[in-house]
Length: 449
Ligand code: ASP
Ligand code: MG
Image (cartoon, rainbow, N blue to C red):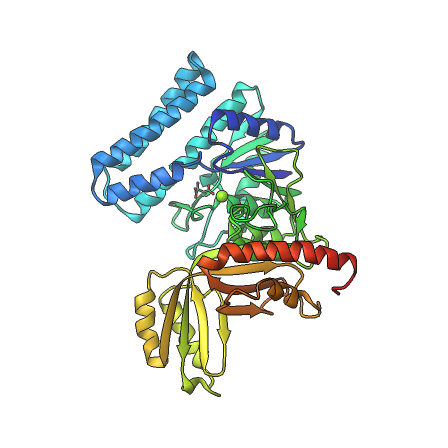
């Protein structure tokens, strides 16, 4: 059994949906197809939510009407006219009425979740009727019937597996279509796996059913060795380990939702990242047998804020770090990177919503300095401490660039450092030129062990 997940661009137009249908048709065996909302739709739903919150009902209705027009065009592109068109168009009007009815309700967290769920419900409906039109033997399964999170927002894998399996066993078809992103929570209310969560859906289904492979179909030829938006001559990585992929996903390689690696890694299910618009390209295979590589890839994460806490009371004291971390925990702010000296701690955050309060509370520990507009550069590869020459190869490339923090040794697969965002593009390019050509040369001469 294989899970195939297609992102928003892949189902963004009828033309693209037909490409998806071809890919699904050309895949053998039992298939579970997970779809995102059509591209732009979840953002549009979020705008509707924001307008409802601001009580701008007329503007919300205009946004709903725009969405309706987009869907009706899609149905027209699918069927032209005729009975099938009428049937699908009616169904789309029903979805439109559901959205309109939301705009009459009072704003609440639950309303937000229900509105956000509408994108995937429509894209899967449209894709299913496209398959039906092609006489494909397939079945649309609602993720709301099996995908579940508990009261702390964690997926309930047993529930997901048992319920989905029962649905699969009751239907004699080879292709099942379902929604990414949406689920039910511990109150059985409609909820979601957070923005970008369709990858996570695919991985959770894959893990719950112990499938042979999870395929993530996107609009780029797999994961790249560097950020193609800022660096020329990047290339797609043939294979990568789960650990390296997890480091990269977190540090801004936006191809995969960071959490989506975890269920696949835990159940050791290979994840293949492929391009819907270039299916011949081999893509990137994430698995536990990836051949070791000194430097696999580079990624950057922007909008980082560094906080330095300097205190002579820290010298030889214990419990100091715990007290600092408590401030961040209380303010529900995740720390990304941390470095310590005997009398100071520097750490970084990317969510600055509670920054003022955090700084206020840290004042009692010592002198606080805050620096904004920073970027973390992450290098993933086989960077264990016994690998000679890799750290010097990295820093030699960027010896002209001021570095604010360095983190190495946290895992065997990552070296990260912090630079001014203004220097990011130069850093990515210098590393690309230096590491991917020099390391290749050195590797062939067996200089690096
Ligand atoms: N449609 C949702 C979003 O845009 C989930 C996803 O596409 O992964 O965030
Ligand atoms: Mg995505």
